[in-house]
Length: 186
Image (cartoon, rainbow, N blue to C red; front, side, top):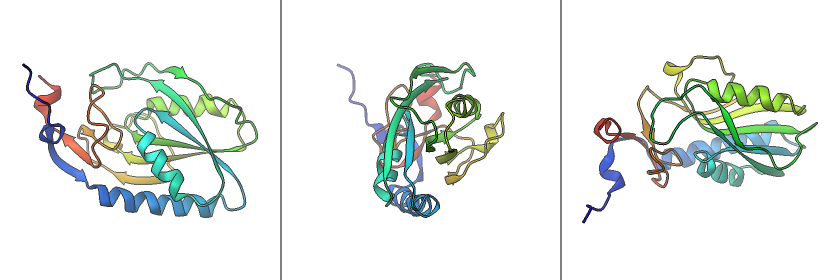
């Protein structure tokens, strides 16, 4: 019989505790509410990793919001490196033409996927298009990305939790943790 998996045992260190995440999300929600005051904004979540962040962020925003979901892939299964090849697996459900759009991301790494997504969404003629990310990993950036709302800048480590996964595991951890290298290099 296989040993039960203890997700927290696979985490080497907690990089950002849950309480710190929640405080930052509240701060970002206040800023978004202020910046878009008097308007409605469409939050576009990039599945699957940003779902917890978007759910908490939209509850912290005090102006009218709509949400839409996209699924974009540049990773394959259990790889820790972006392939650079971007595919749209699920497109928007409704038009964003003439509307204010805020892309909600879990992490910006190389920037390749988000750069592709920005170009794609600009082609749909929104009134405005901004970026909100929980995590930024600038050490790995290959293309410049203008981030409008930033949660945390993190070092070049492989992180999981609060939506971020490795092999579809660890998304449910309430914190951002650094995954033990032996978990993904074995």
